Amino acid sequence: MPLVRIDVTKGRSPQALRELADVVQEVLEGVFAAPPHDRYQVVTEHPPGQVICEDTGLGLRRTDDLVLLQVTQQGRSAEQKKALYAALAQRLEERCGLAPSDLVVSVVASSPEDWSFGMGRAQFLEGDL
Amino acid sequence: MPLVRIDVTKGRSPQALRELADVVQEVLEGVFAAPPHDRYQVVTEHPPGQVICEDTGLGLRRTDDLVLLQVTQQGRSAEQKKALYAALAQRLEERCGLAPSDLVVSVVASSPEDWSFGMGRAQFLEGDL
Amino acid sequence: MPLVRIDVTKGRSPQALRELADVVQEVLEGVFAAPPHDRYQVVTEHPPGQVICEDTGLGLRRTDDLVLLQVTQQGRSAEQKKALYAALAQRLEERCGLAPSDLVVSVVASSPEDWSFGMGRAQFLEGDL
Image: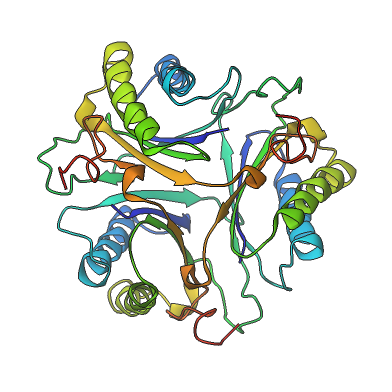
């Protein structure tokens, strides 16, 4: 159920974009309690200059490789979110060569009633999940 | 006030996209307490492979027709959300030929103070609405 | 930390788009308590007809210049949000010629634990910010 919007600047190959999305999903399953096949992602490539991320004074060097993730989910704790950020940074660096300084993550909360995965049903309310 | 992001894979005609957006709005007005002309939608068409939705093990068959809706709203109950999901699935199938297995909906909550519909005013706080 | 999605219909020059984004950021810093360099924006240009905003019966005239902002943030009060809407409308009119009737703003709340600005860290939780 996490729904993940992945916003990047154009420049990666289709294969590299897919690998990026795959690694994000592996991390969600590994440390963020997403069950198998609980994958909902929207990848959007933007023209140069339309993903604008500075650093809030943290001294981070941003490049055009920057990856902005917005994760809508429900039920995870602060500890799970910390684990998510750390694992994303580590795995995306290892697997995709993404600098940890080029990863920004925003999480948005929702409730069990806020999801329908298909068939017009609210699966968390109706006992399907 | 519901703000609806409609993400789809490229492939529909402009007319079919408009019909899709129209039907979503009709359902919001019919079962989700949206008043007339309370329509705020952003339609985004993505290249193949960039809207990635699996099925959380529910046994749903996803196709490139899949429609992902993210609805930011305030004040609706769980019952209203259940009615929304059911009506969207039914009406989009009847009117747009969308398989109910190809509809995913995520709802996000906000507060009355979180909206400005124009003129720099917070209409829900200032008595305009 | 406010993450701002800026959705517009195609038609502005790259310079005009940048100015629009710059003015939004200036307002966030001026009246919405964003510290210097706390800038996180995603600009998306859409084909005609894909940003659909009516007026909830408020009597507003919408044009293809319309700017839809969705601001994900944490910690601001209702008064700060009212000030944000008013300042955005005023400054975008002065600086970008945007009619106040063509500005729609949606704010979404989150928590300190919901942000990682880089390095895999939850900066608000870990004392970095």
